[in-house]
Length: 273
Image (tube, rainbow, N blue to C red; front, side, top):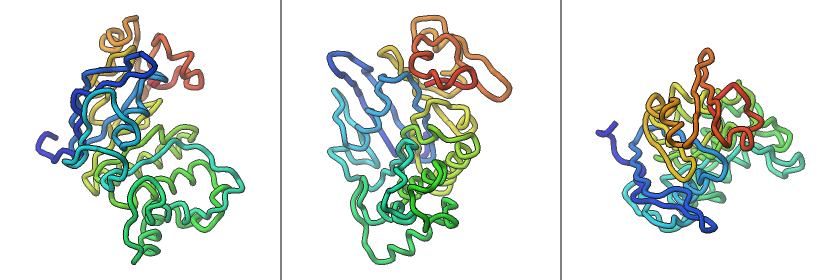
């Protein structure tokens, strides 16, 4: 991986909010084609880290560099962004293809791209994410999985070299989780793009993830899934006994101090955030 170009570099980063240090001394280099999963309890600064990379929020210390340019405000077309899967209201006045077109025309995070060939680009993206059958229906009438496919299409409008995903699998059933993961991974492999993905559950991603960044208790640890997701490392990170168990092809974390309060809807079948 070290021979690949650098897609994202974070140096000496710290994040403090309301007088509390969430983490400090974060150094992270993400290479093209690499997928990083970001785990941690609620309030550990995962989404804020993504927002800092997007240029929407300032770190307390440190720098973020994307594709060789220091981030100083939003608008880097090297970055695609997939938000959490939250259902749109049924009366949303958009068709599915209109949602994708917002990415192509630049009326979402990012800068506009030329209008020539816009419709053809939208059609290509819709086809790429398997949304052709429902692209002309009202977006508010689509299922959560269908809406999230369209959000992926929107995020891929500029063929980004860095794809940021903020809990994109939330509220999706297992089949739709796998479908969205496949779309993200397809872009990563076909375009040699880097992916940084915040998730509550790493199990749908276990076979795609190269490294895990785990934030907890004002500290962090970084390494391969095997290096990070084990009882010894997570116990040291939390400062309390934590056990990582295997249940079939899934990992289960037991005893994380904040797991029950933060992730009551994820009992017993996955690695919690």
